[in-house]
Image 1 (spheres, rainbow, N blue to C red):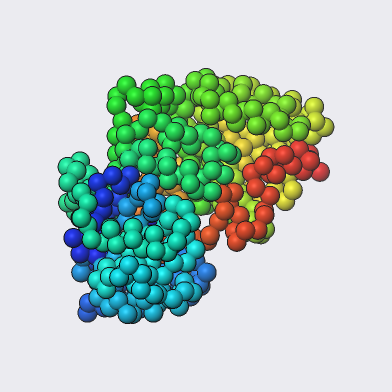
Image 2: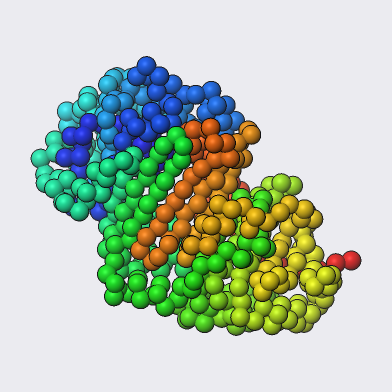
Length: 499
């Protein structure tokens, strides 16, 4: 959604075009976004050299392609843009104000590979699942819910642009979110609408099959989710709110399974990890969730490794269950990984794993209290530090420090029931992003950089430009790197004692 807004902006009247029955809406204050990111010079969109360099090095990135076209799109840079979601003709609609419709048509034709033609008194181009339609003042990009004739899609677009129906702007709760003072991106999403949108996504369906735990949020009785993002030069702040009743199934579920946050697990996570995820759980209750039962059933069907008592191991978790991931610098598509958790019986878990490995003919080497195995090009080290159970799978001998030594990261994980931390490295500047739930209803996010003088909004944009297109299992450009399933099922075959 963030990258789509950069394709345009619109007058505030566009808000009146959003139907009252929309399942979700996002408002973008494009003038402020462009100004704060340094993309405007003398009322013209100009890409800073530092951003252009990243685009040149990542020219296949969808965001980089959009940014390259941005100065030639003929957009109106003086007001807002909107994206909304429906269950009618279009599943998703982007509304963009135009200063030069002819310029927009020409750029889109070159990029999309189609031609505009008059349909229902609108200039329309229908390519794939997307209808591009303009009345000369506004560009509408609608993704259809199902294939149809262009005339039918154009008629629906004309109805939206004429804004004769009741608008979502008349809903007080939604309007308050969209008009939140001091934030540049504001979103409201109905709980049922979010589920409808996700169910149409092939990526989400793949993820939910492999990670049923995501259903705690997407399949629950949440009423709505709101999000407000403040994009400033000195930092980016995000605030989310999950709207649900105190006695809702969602609230009861999380209250019964989530444990107190803790940051001591970071003592086992190297500070070089690109991503660190955490979820604080009461293991004995956690394993009773139907989503976890589904995972355990899937795990139990795997050859060899499915025999280990995973349910018994998970039941000992009491606090943060944390995973650190970093790209393997030596093998494309491979990852270095570290798992760490507070367990009620860490030594007992280590013994269970060792007993299982020995039964499979994989006796470990024991060095300074760690159980060491060889896995492909990596070593697996299993051990306990300060009561924290950990497993490291690295293709190098660790010499760097730990995430616990990074004060902002330590503070963040000390208060996050569920949390994500990510870091990027571009030129000499490091970018850091964290997002977490402080309680079951409220979440906060923060993006900052290692250079206090850097433009945080611009650096966020540069970081997003480096993200490669990936499928549901983390494979780039459609290549198969084995995925989660092949990784787990092949683990025993590659697991060997150290020579």
